[in-house]
Length: 120
Image 1: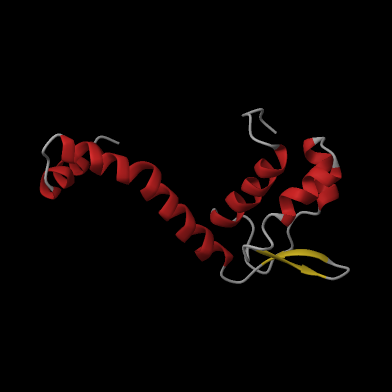
Image 2 (image 1 turned 180 degrees about the horizontal axis):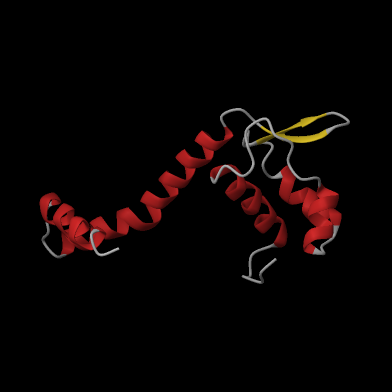
């Protein structure tokens, strides 16, 4: 795990979420076990378990008793919706606020996005 200042269990949860979002961990597929995650990242199994368990109340993972954790149906859609909302809050809202300060209207902002989007 990279040392980005965030707790390891949150990084584990995000890693699983990323795998679901990018499709490498499909809905109804078994999630990596806490022991697998702990061994791979060389962390305490309790830390790995805390990361995995973070995703249960959100409806991303569910437990099959005696078998392990599985990706819930609809988890990818749920995560994409949440990330889109986070994206809007983190990037779009400040962009619009700054554009308003500059006296820009919606059409000017769209043109700006079109111009910058074509530069990729």
